Amino acid sequence: MSDNLSRANDCPKRFVFLGASGRIGHLLRSIWPDITASDLRVDWQFRSAQPTIPNALVWSDLATLEPFLDHAKSVGGLDGLFVFLGASRTGDKADADQMAINVSLVDQALKASVAAEIPRILIASSSAVYGGGEGVPFDESSALHPVNAYGMAKRDMEALCLSRAADYGIEVCLLRIGNVAGADALLGPTEGWQSGDAPRLLDIFPDGDGPRRSYIGPESLADVLRCLALQSQPLPQVINVAAPVSVSMKALLDAAGVDWKPRPVPASPLQDIVLDCARLATLSDIKVSDGAANVLVAQWRRALEVL
Image (cartoon, rainbow, N blue to C red; front, side, top):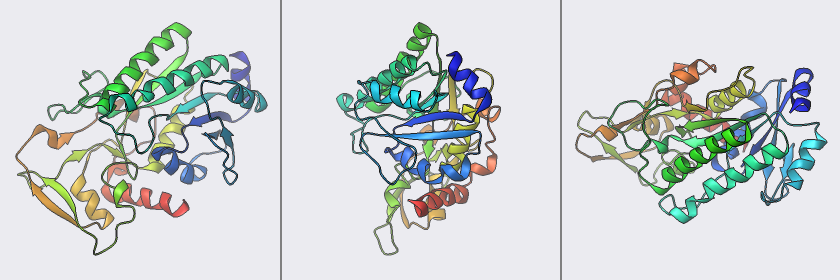
């Protein structure tokens, strides 16, 4: 790893983003040039050629290491990976067989990182590993009780990564990401919503509010990834990733100008499924204001303008 580390002292850090065609990668690509500074360069991995996208790496079969190793050599070595690989956008999160690819793809990425002597690997996990909870914010030490195949696959992926890190002696950081505005199940489907379309159904609890969740906008996420990539000290093995405060889904739909229809539901601890992001706050520039509904929607809309 000495070649990579010496290069990093003299040049901008260079990372590859694996999974550039996924929901999150799709949004990040649009705004990344405005977020990153001259101290970090990102190359984007696709399975097929992308002639209009700069810094594209075509790596169609992750089981074949040569394209990745050739790329690493051609740029003088890599300082890290952002691993956002997973099931396709149309994958059924309740299907265990489809979700198992979340484990196998990441395992291939880890093998590639070892072969290329890459010193830092940031891997997208999910807050889904925690499960429903009891209305108390999850911190990184909370027990994992995923409730669907997607969460179970992410939990299994995490266990594999920690085992590989111990076996290979590599730095692996698991990012338990909350909802990313625009790549989520609430705002994402409203991308083409217009006045007059059928309103969205939203659970409304006895306090008059909807579900409250941990969110992060695409711009804030890009900045968090940059901060973590450039940390001079080893990263924790697990970091919750979201804005410091939760947001009401009702407020998000209102900020997006999407009509919604209430569906009354009884009181439940599932109204609040929230991440404790105190650890992230010590490692990045994330702010309380990044979690405001209007900020989240604005970041999402700016990303869409570029796409």
